Length: 343
Ligand SMILES: [Zn+2]
Image (cartoon, rainbow, N blue to C red):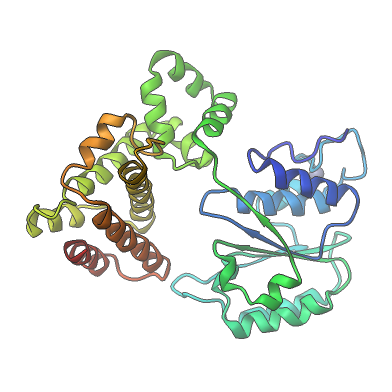
């Protein structure tokens, strides 16, 4: 049997589905890849377009995609002329109709090198309704040999008419066990740490939010980064009880990372910690994604009720959405502190 998608880990079901669609040449012209941050949406899209364009795609003796031919390599580096990308511009919260129209016109030109043309729209859920309607026109009658992949976190923001003309694939982040298994198979550092200090490895994997790239980068040297991230999260958790003074709460929030990406990672990890706490508080079950022990989770819950955790959860999720809209960091942090106080 043909070895397909050798570089994909996790998301086994949809990888299998895509493999059979590609091998039987029945891949739909429009696909939606939907899933949370870090669940492999971009990798899946890139591997799919590589499989469509790979120079060795017809030879059974190569994996599909081969990853070694000129086209595969150029797709991986974003430099293949017949694979185009559209993403939200920095500083903008939406993808507008003009950007979409320019993209659409290109779809009717012939391919430069390949037999097909592929279009990847990142942040597809940021397309305005007008942009989506412009896209709809091509989805209704897609030009021959054109493949359009929409990547998004929330398919609900896509028009029903778009969703009905595309096949959906939902990606999921790794469970703690899957991440552990894949990281051990990929990283010699992880294997030696598993033998020498399994608790440390566990802490690093939990800080990675189920995202293999983050786990490997933490293992590749910036372990202190993973520890700093967990410490930032715990500093916020410790000031969440109502009885803590506003000045202590404000100082902890103001000390969060000022760089957008780092702040995003910290808040995402905080959401994970809150989820652990809420699950334990409500159901008595401990299914750790952040805390390395039940005692640590119980300690974090001191002085906190379920309702307050839910409210803070909402505050942090809405801050994450604001971060995506490129709001300024300092006012956002003040806003978080004020909203946690009111929560
Ligand atoms: Zn190839």
